[in-house]
Image (cartoon, rainbow, N blue to C red; front, side, top):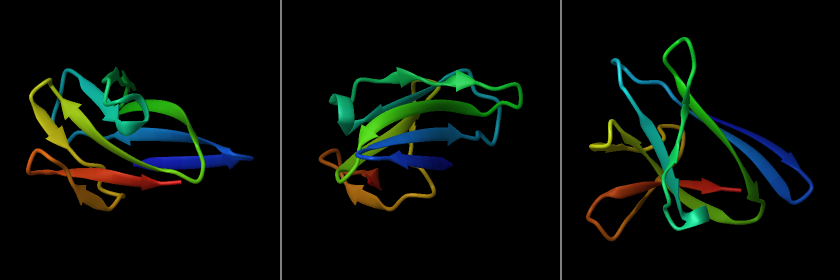
Amino acid sequence: MIKITKKKNKAWVTFTYKPTQKVSSVILSGSWNDWAGESMKEKKNGEFYITKVLECGKNYECRYFVNEKEWYNESQLPVVDNPHGSHNSLLAL
């Protein structure tokens, strides 16, 4: 799930990943920082979240890396091809 709050030329984007089964870690990777993974915090209900401040007027690609072995896209966002024969989520701000 994605929640976006825009103020002037910045957007506060909260990414929330709701696993369908118990997971130990979720890492968000995206084009805004050359795909350096960032650990998401776990809520009491089992969801994982992180908030990023990003520049408006740009497109960003991202993915979730779950349990350090499986990649998932954000279901609310469209996808684009990536160079690895898979897809990335596309966030257009």
